[in-house]
Length: 503
Image (cartoon, rainbow, N blue to C red):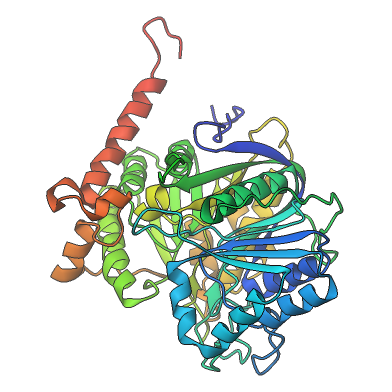
């Protein structure tokens, strides 16, 4: 029944690690606001700042001036250490991703200065199988406030939500300009943050062999300039983690993506960097085969970041999207690319999903194989169907309207009015797309033979570390596609009524 009360999609132990209460929570869109806010939070930290990330650059300015300059992150941490030596600053960075910084003398000198500073502990994370990356982007302050999402504290990330064509503040440490960049993260206070602190300490312990201990001051560090979106809300935490030494494989993120797709009634609005998981694509295709399927609207970059990623990820996305399109009789599956008024593509690095305005997901996971089984990931989820979350839908609606308005160079009120009139995300985009920032449909041109071979065999996007060494005949996106269809059939069978009419 349309008005039936939905059951929760998140289930602890099935598709999430645990569900914890947050005193306050908010989604921060784009790095300009995030860097400014987290800088203020770190200045007020009493005991510990813990940063766990895929990428990290000491040379960036958190608040660049009109020339792209300002106090660098490296100098900022030295200042914090000098002002309050008893406060520890622990930074854990993926080891392979750190290699590129060694080519920059300024970065090497700053890391040496950090090494000489007792309050700063910079470590490299190599505690993972070969080919795996540590992809989480987590900041925890005093174990009581935390940020988790898609934004790295690194170069080429800072941008405002205006995504101007020529913003002089959007420059690399070398002074070279970079393209517009769209991203998002979630900030939480309370027990949810304490759970992320526990996750961070476990990762630190695994990577370094040292137990950092708890550092909860219980003092509120919520930024005064940030309005809370969600108060007293239950938030689920979902992870991906590859098996390594004594730690077991964790696949909550993939299970949650599949459960979200299956539970979607009207629409799923998704911002993501990749679509290369055959399982997830097959789950979407199965929904498109229904008589009255929901809309799946994806906002993505036109091309991946880097030559290798383009060969592996872009071709796989086209292959899977074309396969979904073959069964999409009502044209309800769309992939859009955000573009500036001057015609420059805005790179989408955000990992956001909103289902039926009743579930919000923000994290680090992409819709690729690596995020489902190989790389370490962490997502936060607010599900309105949880008993305690009875009043969160208006805030989720407001966030969706705000995100769509950003891409359409419109305002949330206009987006809300158009959606109220049509009930369709696609219709909203068609009605409000204009000459300013706008959304363009992704070109589905067939990839070339080399790209097709790399994509079909998942040469750079395996789901497990063993996938790098498996024979080509035993792997590939179409093997994942078949697994996704099998999962869908098993789920449908499990939910089918029994002979006596009980479900």
